Every structure is written in structure tokens, then in C-alpha cells.
Length: 87
Image (cartoon, rainbow, N blue to C red; front, side, top):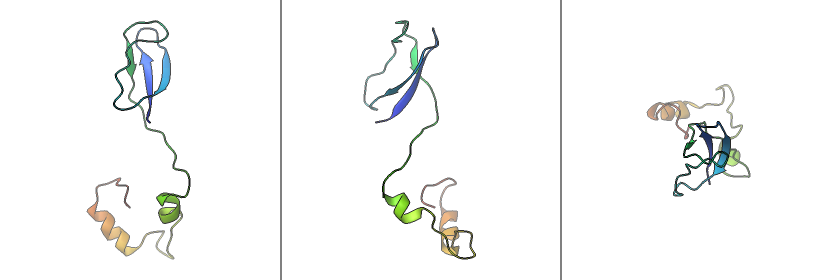
């Protein structure tokens, strides 16, 4: 479940709330009871843990003399959009 940052534009109260995407909007400030409590735009924050695909397939994978990249991965990466998660 995502965690969102909220801030009241009336009193400045800030809080992180865990909300389902399908949950109804929260607009009443818990501090001042005004209808000025809104979701802020913020950077996502998460950490992958356990032995999932990142740890087993990609973490610390290097090949000698190529700085961790192979010629195949360079040509495949050129086909993707910048910042893609697959390369």
C-alpha cells in the first residue's frame, strides 16, 4: 500500500498516510478540521528486500574489462527508453 505525504494549506500540518489507490480522498485536516488537507507531490521511497529478482539476477553482476556491461546489454539498452528498469 503506498504512503502519501499530505499537507494542510491552512495550518501547515503535515502527515504521511498509508492509503489504497482506490480509497476516497482525504481533505479534512486532522489538526484544524478545515477542508484544506491535500496530497503533496513527492518522490517515491521504497527498498527492495529479500532474495528477489534484483538480488539474484542483477546486483553486483560484472564482466571482466567491460565495466559491468556486455556488448549485448549495450545494444539492447539502446532499444529502450532512457531510465528503463530492464537494463
